Length: 126
Image (tube, rainbow, N blue to C red; front, side, top):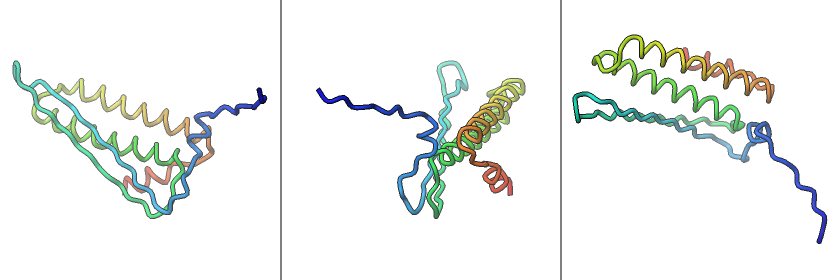
């Protein structure tokens, strides 16, 4: 039997990967089912598709997708708060959780790949 060395694939390898494409599409979606009355639910489903005219490393796609999903989720929770279907406290906890999750992901990607992701937050805020 031939002795073949198997190289491990790390998540860092995955984050740095590209597929040679000339453009990139990033899709994000969020779905939330909420109890509105006893035995009655409301489903809120949102999706966004972002088109980029350049190739993006997987790490950047991951972060852009996470930010887009957070925007959709925040929008959903704002709507639920306005309708009285979540409390201000529940809204605040979810908001803080989204901020924390994005902070951790951004820090991890930047540490592991050296890619600065601030440009996406600045472009999104404008």
